[in-house]
Image (tube, rainbow, N blue to C red; front, side):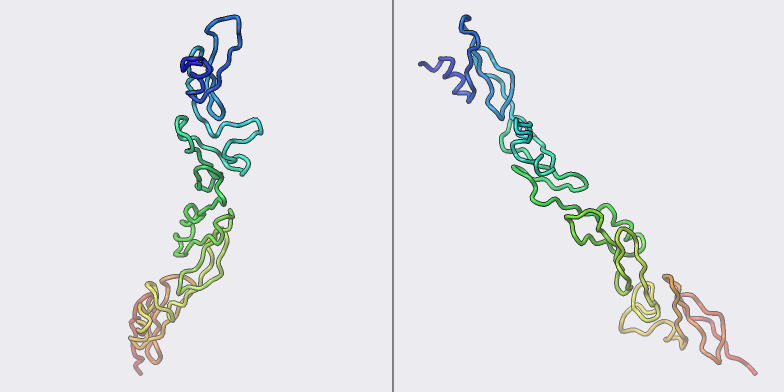
Length: 217
């Protein structure tokens, strides 16, 4: 057999040779070999494309993405080995050449704003699970984490040191004590007050030293 023999022409192109009509001269064709596909070409090599995501006779793709509950993506029909498995939303994980072992979900990327909007932190305890993100209090505030929503945090702004507190540093006295007054805190934020100490009197001041006067007889 010569190099131009039909079988050799197809084999050189890694294709199969077929001659479906032996009564007609020159009717032989070269056909693609799986997983490559394309229309047979009469008298020469066929134009074949490679789709590693193409469903095979066993109902799955060559990479096994579908069997793992993932999608299969083929970036280029001309390149072998570039197909990748893609995790279902909301995960964005993907892996070239086979299924992603564990699909992860960073739920704080989507829901973190719910927590930060009220000065709390978002945490996702298990990135392999969906629906377990939670809001947590930020120190010095304290409270029980809450799944899927902002939680309730307690902060004694007269005792702790923070941006909204009566004292800004842990080694400093609070604003009220420095003025000889008493600090009183309520349930909210930035709502602490300085109160006059008897025998002085005056209206409490929110977030600052009160204007106190002495009783005159």
